[in-house]
Image (cartoon, rainbow, N blue to C red; front, side, top):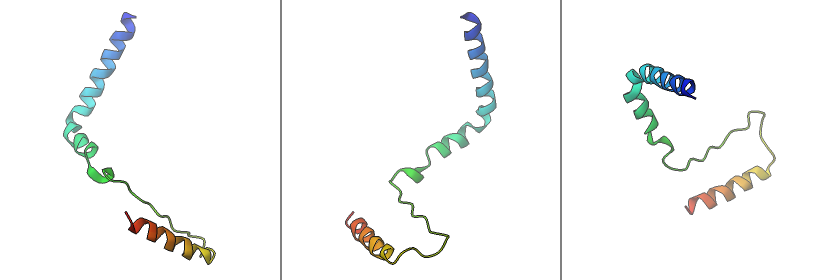
Length: 68
């Protein structure tokens, strides 16, 4: 048990020594507000146009999203 504790403390110390110089940069990236609000990602179809009904579905999606 004591050996495991020594190893854990040693590993924690190594991580702190390695990450210490980058702490402010890591903290800034962690607090980045990019995902502070929900994000909608729409992927394009690289294989060509879809069926004609896709336009209707996209219009319904646009109408629904415009209410929010």
